[in-house]
Image (cartoon, rainbow, N blue to C red; front, top):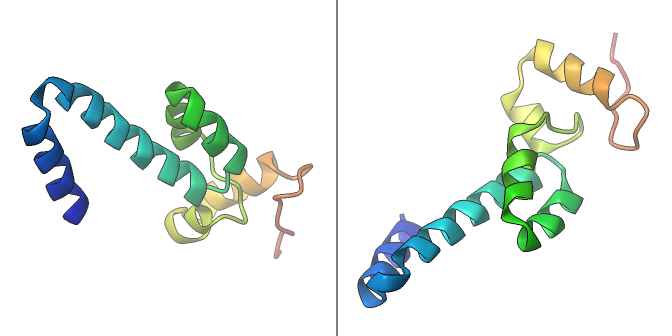
Amino acid sequence: MCALGLVIILGALAPHQARAIFFFVVDIGLLAVCWLKGKRGMVLLGLVVPLVGLIGAVRLAKPSSYWAWHWYDERQLLEAQRRFAGSDGAVADPS
């Protein structure tokens, strides 16, 4: 709520920059999703290339990430474990 108020104030103070402020806020939100999905490299690259943040936010999260453990159902979690089985972000299969 506070962030929304800040965006409204910034938009009112600099109306000619409102579009840039909006895209900046959206990019920060996408980078936060990437961070929660365990994609730290995409966050760093997304600071320079905003489209990378969108791609990272849409793709599957690492199975050991906060996002996977709190938002994925069992089918999605198993798919993430299967996809990341060869990487260091993998979690052992409990079954």
